[in-house]
Image 1 (cartoon, rainbow, N blue to C red):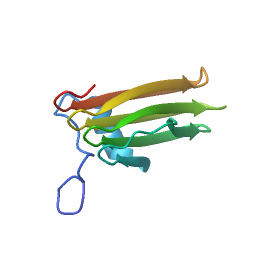
Image 2 (spheres, rainbow, N blue to C red):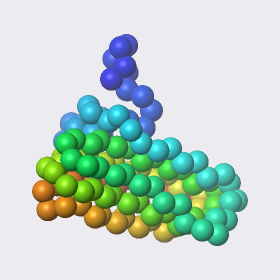
Image 3 (tube, helix red, strand yellow):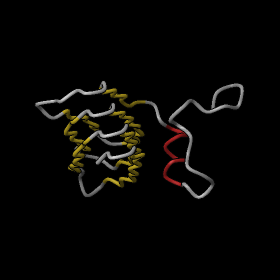
Image 4 (cartoon, one colour):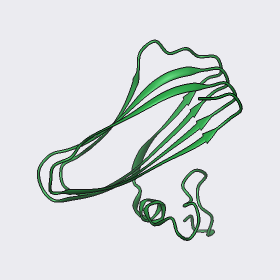
Length: 127
């Protein structure tokens, strides 16, 4: 929360029962915002990487895909060594007629606890 009690857009949890969102919002310190313009046809995938080396990591991945745009997005969650607690919240907004393939790759060690959430807001005729 900001000093005036408000929450920055895109960071608020989805209600009182959203434990992963609340944990992530409380500790998030890093992330990405990707904005793909209307009508864009990406020929190569976009890869979003979250790499941890132990300890705690909390990341937010926000992506908006404009009307009629097409993209492939690879979300890679990877870590090495040591105990870890990771929370990640990925939020995808598809405008009208947008098309996205979203792949999640998790390469965490056995000593990691990874709490993840994926939210999609899908516009008319989007997929």
